[in-house]
Length: 88
Image (tube, rainbow, N blue to C red):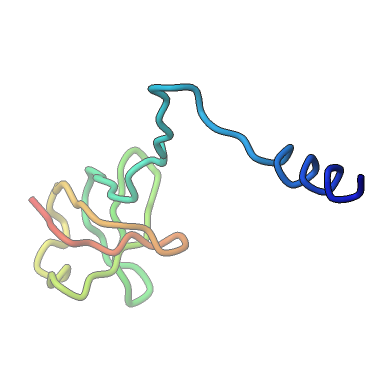
């Protein structure tokens, strides 16, 4: 009797998806594109648009050459800083 109850508990926790069902992650892409003017502030860089500033950093692009220019930057956030992979 105990083995029958034990099997019921083990098999009772098992479930399967209905035929034809799939599971997919709908997580948003971590890649972000921001538009605005590159500014230098406190030794770092920011992109500014309509009074909203976002910290920028990049290991690939020299952001200094874009100061004062309106650009579109694409990258991924680490904390509150967008690490820029491309700039147009």
